[in-house]
Length: 222
Length: 222
DNA sequence: TCAATAATTCTTGTATACAATAATTATATT
DNA sequence: AATATAATTATTGTATACAAGAATTATTGA
Image 1: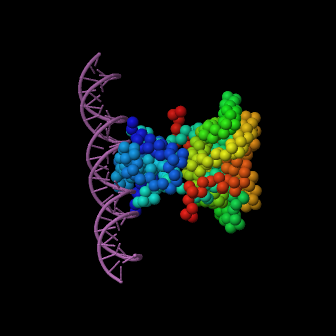
Image 2 (image 1 turned 90 degrees about the vertical axis):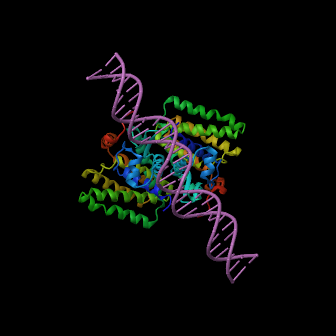
Image 3 (image 1 turned 30 degrees about the horizontal axis):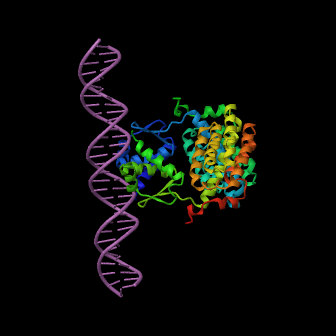
């Protein structure tokens, strides 16, 4: 398939970076990628250029491509924007979701109850993604939905561990209940407010949020 | 200078697309760009890959790169997000701007008064950009500021003509006055609300907004 | 004359070659 | 032995070469 090699490569690397399989800061050696994917440097370089525009990779002239390492400041800023975007999605979803989508959202929430009970972290993680993406789509603004999803992806490496505690799971489930109620009942102000605080801090303090970040992945140069 | 050729190329094309010098839908021929910039296809292609990730260019496999043409739906969605981002910038700026930035904002607003009087459309256009960017920066959230600026750029080709009427100029000036007052006085709710409506509709109707769009630049395929 | 198909040309996508700079290792000097 | 400098190696950035698919033109047959 044509031109797909550089796009495929980009998607694969994107996936690995977002999932934290390639740790922030790692150098992406062109010839190494060449050998790994069995292609020449041309598509490898094109995929790296793409990733650099997605802000997932930093290209330092004449010294190579590196998986982007966020500073604490950058992360805090990004989480703040994420909160706004999630809030906006919730506000619009509360306004615009048709009945079947509201039912689906309720369902997506309810199926997580046993996952919380069984402390199925991986299961809850996946269900959580589905729940939130249903809200993004519920905004019926595809651009907003894509932007929010893309920002979520960029923050994922820094959040993976956040749900790995039983109390956080319970907390998240509780908040989802309120969010679901707000959206399905069409209370857009409440939906916006709940989702705005849900992302970042899980109703805890800013210090709790900071403490939840994996400091070893964070750029301390500045 | 190293690796700068593909980045320079990207920046130059980005500039021309944002300013509408290259009309949406135009095909970007690789060899033509090769000849124009006096470089080989490699940096040309790399810059096109970059632009495609910025959503300014659409690469159709095996048929080339085209300046992205937005559909009406996409535009409406993007303007809706733009309104939210501007509002958020305003809200945060009202909270976070130090005194000197508030003074600077007042000044940026006041210097537009003669421009409005003299119907200096180009001058007002530039001053308007400066005014809004001061608010973005005032949010003291660089990520938000960058995102907002980038989205504004993507929408620019579809807004260039919006201020080309005397009544719109007056209207914009009047709204800026209120926005400036809200931000400098720290009224964040008002700042958010005013900026949210300022972007899109200039307090007019949705139909007025639609009518202001250059339909010839808009993708009608869907 | 028009439609369908074949031949040709053009363009993209990928691989490779070459040049320039950075990184590394070796050598020399104190 | 340690540091500075030179030589070597490796890696990036750009140009070119080649292969495959799309677009265009020419040709054939009704």
